[in-house]
Image 1 (cartoon, rainbow, N blue to C red):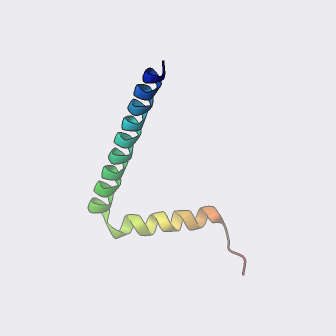
Image 2 (tube, helix red, strand yellow):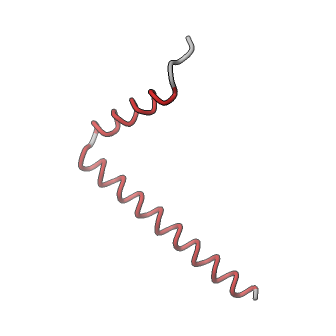
Length: 55
């Protein structure tokens, strides 16, 4: 029974790692394609979500 859990956990870790690599590659492609404009737009959107800053 313990062997099955170990195999299942290993499969889950492989799936998570694969998803992480795919997400990294997608982000890298976006940055390579759109460059600085994507970073600046994302930063502005993040600032808008935080609302006005106190001070």
